[in-house]
Amino acid sequence: MKEMVIQTNRLTKKYKGQTAVRDISINVEKGKIYGLLGRNGAGKTTIMKMILGLTTVTSGEIKVFNEKLKGNESSIYPRIGAIIETPGFYPNLTGTENLKIFAKLRGMTREDGIKHALEVVNLPYKDKKLFSNYSLGMKQRLGIANAIMHEPELLILDEPTNGLDPIGIAEMRSFIRKLSEERGITILISSHILSEIDQLADTIGIIHKGVLLEESSREELEKRNRKYISLEISNASKAINILEEKLHLSDYEVEEDTKIRVYDLEVSMAGINKLLVSAGIEVSELHLCHESLEDYFKKITGGEGIA
Ligand SMILES: Nc1ncnc2c1ncn2[C@@H]1O[C@H](COP(=O)(O)OP(=O)(O)OP(=O)(O)O)[C@@H](O)[C@H]1O
Ligand SMILES: [Mg+2]
Image 1 (cartoon, helix red, strand yellow):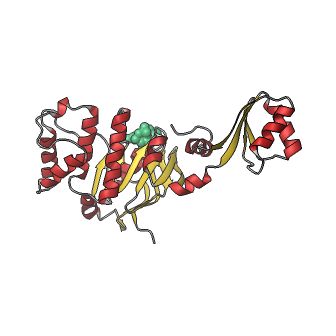
Image 2 (cartoon, rainbow, N blue to C red; image 1 turned 60 degrees about the vertical axis):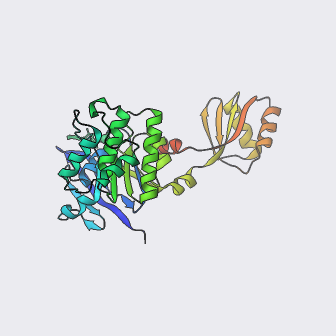
Image 3 (cartoon, protein in one colour; image 1 turned 60 degrees about the horizontal axis):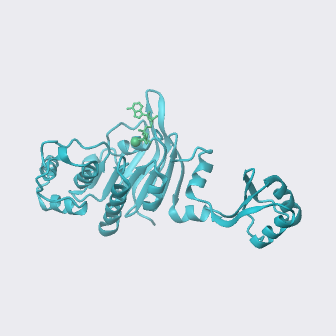
């Protein structure tokens, strides 16, 4: 049996009669990175806020560490670290001073937690630089340090790479991976950027308009991404006629007037080429492709896609 760290059961949130999250049941496995993927307004932050008790639950249930959250908040929350909105750091203090204040508020007594957390995110300990002079990347990293300094077992990160440049994004990804691999922390992360979730998450939950469309492991998703032959030709409808008649093709999709995807991989690419060319159709491209995760999401979100 897989051990779950978060399980929600038909979790629902309504804001003044408007449903922001509807009947969402997610399962976050211990030690794994779970990526919530969805467009702006999909409901990602609302789900995280409900788990963290920052907004009320309209209906449904949340279990964390195998216990009902309701009634067990005081034993569960100390085991969680989170970044939801930018934590209110003091601009006139240094990073280390800021963390000391937050540590005190949480009743943390050991200072090596702060030192260690700063090490993980590559920020200097007891540096003189004030928070107000930090770059956005440094601010986000301090946010992570703040979330991990009490050594939580579960980390909840709402769009931790928002606003970062590509190098900042790559760095953030490596910290998150490090926390997962080296410390075995379970991580729930959200993003509206597909490639980000794709590169990090072991399990992906796709949220669209408040509904969980799918929850799959990376392997399951990869299996579902079909292979196909991509054809670029001078005339798609003429080509289709020939392919249907001579090769009895039926599993294909016309993308544009000049582009076809053939999912039937029994036929040889050389055979297709020869046939079309001999019928006077120009073949400008012919190659084997893998349907991307993005294609897949477009399909299940009804063509809207994610990022
Ligand atoms: N406090 C609130 N009052 C009323 N409606 C809200 C409130 N917070 C969120 N909503 C609505 O709930 C829905 C889900 O919002 P949420 O912030 O959870 O989405 P999200 O997936 O985090 O989006 P984003 O990618 O923009 O952060 C949206 O329609 C939003 O307008
Ligand atoms: Mg959000």
